[in-house]
Image (tube, rainbow, N blue to C red; front, side, top):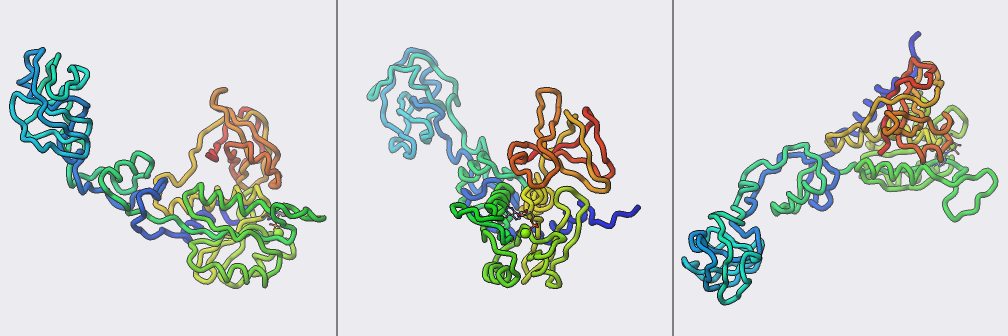
Length: 399
Ligand code: AMP
Ligand code: MG
């Protein structure tokens, strides 16, 4: 039997195609954590830039300390950041600090621990070989070397390297800017009284956090009532400059589906995707801005974000790891799943007890507390309707 619903993979592709690749821009190095290099990183300077001391001690000629103990006159002091003002002469020493440039003519550093620490003359108790305690210019990085290839994920160490090379900005695909808007006349904000039939709004905070966790920038428009005019007013005033409008609620089969009503015939198409939760979805473009409309139930919205939005945002930034990590695991309890739909159940994975995953809460898409204590989604394929305890499943980690 053919499936009248949109396939999960097709909707994923649709969203990824809508968002597209972000432009490559120079971004301040300090803001690049979690982004990917969009070009090879080529060293404009050498590391180290000059021969320097690896130790606090005395710059010497190794030949002058071949026989110890030996006393040498200390003719200059070289702290880090300065150079010797005295020509280095054989038979002398210059006191030198870690990172200070080795004076020309010296070929080794005796660490202070092997001396009496003298300031006008120093007694050296143990000799060193030529080159000892000297960090050679360019021994880490040569000028013009490619230190990181395009596509490298920028973590602390990579940013440190870029900073060491004097790079104040890096070429990256910038973070997508996402406008997050919740809909529903039942929604109230924190601090407001819960009147009859009202609930506290939660998708906005959750989805904005999910955008940021994925590496994007989120702006929260909070929420609008189920009123097409109010929806258009809120969206129209703010949409310009965003790379994605992400709505939740108002897209299922009932009446008062504000997102559907506002966007139908205006460039956004609505469909049912063969998954549970998260069936009702919409995608398109409004006023030139890509739009993804997620269902309102909090677990549906979260799972939809994981399946459709997160990979699209990460692909847009050119990140090497677009997908969450997955693993195979054995179910600790049986599961049932609707035919013809991929089910994403919340679970807790325990690697210690032999890769076992325990379903948390039921399939209900309002069960937010179960989601909040889960660490993975359990994927039950479309054609599977029952799984026994012990059955192998794929789990998709949420962190
Ligand atoms: P809808 O998709 O608008 O029909 O909403 C489905 C369910 O999700 C309803 O129970 C709504 O009250 C709830 N819901 C929708 N949006 C939100 C939101 N932003 N925060 C919390 N619950 C929501
Ligand atoms: Mg609603």
